[in-house]
Length: 210
Length: 184
Image (cartoon, rainbow over all chains, first blue to last red; front, top):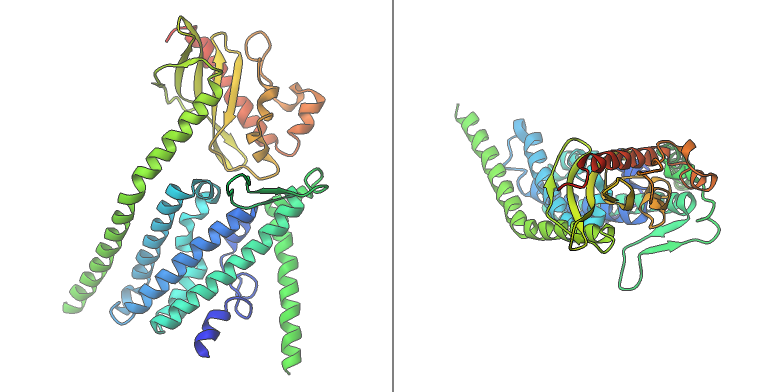
């Protein structure tokens, strides 16, 4: 049962974006299109899960005095792997993510989970924590991107499959979108409203429990 | 002393394993990345070549013009393809443009860019470059939004930085081609 908790806590109760407020820079930077959010989210799930597993496996070997350099080397290696794979096989996502992809190395969620969880817990729990936190981050990022793209550009950009171009145009909104939402200021505004909503939901559920 | 050596060895081993892992993945992805880059470049070149024969690339690298390629119809040189570096709202952009030998723009395409979707990203749309095509010889290319028609001005509204970057690069490209004067 506790294993399931490790997996699900990152999705709502300890959501990295809306509750812990980690990884704000890529959240605001790449949430302009749904496809970018999914690409970034999947990259973070991969890096977070792999680095958590490795760090958990090596937690008794890594000396305490050099644990941060070791964590950074492990995380940077997985980020480099993701970067090379995306560049080769999904170049459109690689180009769209731009500088935010290498910046996963210093994403607070990854280093935060390595320091707070993987360095102190077993491999299975660390892997589940990485997957759960990664899914929570992906869902939050996708929600922000969906709202920003639908209202800010009047489109939903997914991935092209066969004859489907990957772009769904929303009649009415695509002709006269709320353009401020595609800008950084719009992202901050939306983030504030979503944070307030999650805060309200959390305080309501705490009130219910009491 | 032993503690320091042990720490250094552990750090070295972790770094060595990570490097080997990255090298392995690079071995698989590097040829795919090189092939993709070349395909994208060839596709962009053929899009702007306007059916003319594409010659050999000549590197320039002066900050704006990266390289040029002469275009011919089998006989003499009819124009040039020029790859230009531009600066947009989201950072560096690359424009591939073809010019007649008098410096008039034939075709242009925005390739690498990080412009804002719904705003600057519209410069990737097929019709965006129409406002520049045919200009650069007798009639100058638009340098600012005030040089555009009311319709084109509305089309670039909200993406002035992207427009400014592209127009400035296209003007530089046109001047460069005029300087070549029909020579290779």
